[in-house]
Length: 368
Image (cartoon, rainbow, N blue to C red; front, side, top):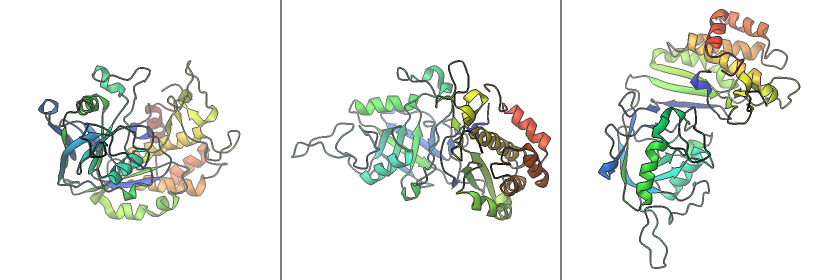
């Protein structure tokens, strides 16, 4: 199968400079912690596994410990009804339930709109932090998670990515997996008090800044950045670690793979409709296809893994991307292996090594 960094769905380029965002309950690679203090029955040794948002401003070195409230809506509407949700509160003199008492941490279900929209609306309603309760089981969770009837499990973790508008978010947020969120939600909906803590260690304990770049080979917004940033990446050297990610979308969830495993989305997809990208010129009969974008995305991911993953600088990756934009970034040459090989030669990249990497990752044919 394709490398996990390619199993991401989004639509615009983004750059994030962070500490580690992956968090394990066993204490490995932890930059934050999520724990329930009340009731004690929901307290879990080591805390709850979760994922941090790639937006917002966590209080690094500090924590938030507040009562948890569960929103009765998806929080996609900016007009948040703070007098709804759980636990049930006393009524005021007008007979309306009292609003969530600040400060509080708000739990809201995933779905309906972007993570950024939910957290922004929670922030405007007075929340100090947000817990997104996943509503779909991960397939890897096995019998520990119970999906709603008619809902299939997800093969990959959701990523709390910025939708491009999250610069105004100042509160922190976590994603909590369904098997952990469900019992906490049930406790709150039974009108019992739940007190939860969100805590953060100081980032970059290795004294190194980590920054990630999300884009596609056809993205126009990021081209100037890709042309200009190599010198900065080299100057940062071992004081920083760069990781590029390529956006594609899941063809199976989008209905591009038929019941017999056939590709139903023409040339938008590779691997029998499993991995897809939008057609950059909106013409399925000519020009650059979605499948071409997927192929180039896999190629760039392999170039990074072979030439950049070890040192976090990836000079050859930057060189290849710039050579490609100069030589191949048009409908005549985008999918030309002759042009691609020329770019790799100028960037001093071993094309045989990249071909092997792409094959080992599952290639572009068959249902891999």
